[in-house]
Image (tube, rainbow, N blue to C red; front, side, top):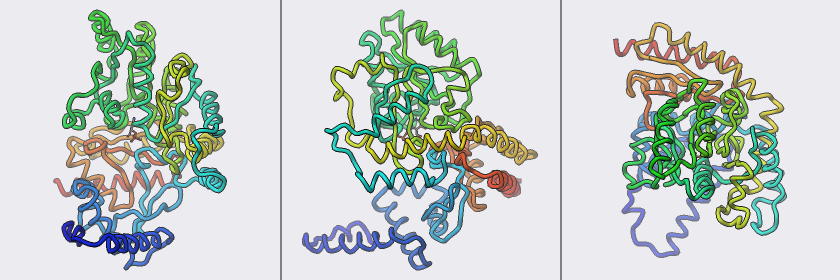
Length: 465
Ligand SMILES: Cc1ncc(COP(=O)(O)O)c(C=O)c1O
């Protein structure tokens, strides 16, 4: 290992630059390779682990099951292994039951998405930001056609957090007399100051000082609590301008609301004149068995946020889609909210191809069918281990296993990794682990996952008995 102070020993500018040139040359040679030999794999592993420790954040090595130092050699990722799996630097494959936290709905590197992006790249990579870019208009029109209700206009960005940030700003601009936004406990919407303010996880909020003002939280799936809060806010003259929710909470533990919840929230928003913002960053693009999760309950929001799988697992891409009334606040000055890279031609090409693939391959329907099959398989696998897994739940291909504590969840996810299945906790907590594979997962792979769970539970049970 090269210590930091060694790295920073006084050098001439020319020496520093020569070193950087040599290092980047070596890395570029590596990037160009499809496969690597064991010596190269060892170098990649050492550079990765040391780089995380010395230059990214050593905390990642502490918590990631993949990167305890002894295990590191086996779990530094190198490539995709078909549409539904990863390969590590040693060549071992892992079925992807995490899907980059919901990125890979159409599978890894779907050929149609890759083709659209590379075709666009050959012609033009990014946009002028002055001339009108055609794909932005065509993607916005596509979303207007695809999304429910009166959603008609789109703003494009690069991530879910940015989509939420834009949604919060749109809501605030909509009615200056109604500046309060209500979110839900266990909600997660991202980590910029605006997105964090509407999120609910204390651990992520506490270190960062006062959040945005006029943000309230009520328990998820609790209509009386929402009504009470809206009434109270009205009574004190701080009227609710918007309610923001995930239709099914992802990071909060795959929490599926009662069937009357979302329609009830829509009705309350209408009664109190508040906008409904639905965060479909994780639940959208077919994940739960409908193109958008809110369609399970026939609810249309005023603002919908998309990201993650929106870029087809190839490009970072996000969008906030809203009604004409909502977006009209920006018509007078479209520069009120902009971003350099949002809606770039590569991202738009990826999103257009993704939507095409989801429809053509009927992936939302597949998610509904395969999700049911997998849920039954997972439930079967945990039979006899109810002391380890206390609940198995899911909607479409967004599924979760709940454990009595963080430790057991972590042990089971480690055991599954050893069996070639990648699952993950809900952010830093493994008490609930997510099973969120690409919607293209084969039936056989789904069965392999259930088998791996049964074997992992047997192993963990034998250790704790
Ligand atoms: C529901 C939801 N909203 C927003 C975000 C933030 O998205 P991003 O990480 O792309 O900024 C996430 C990320 O996990 C999410 O699950």
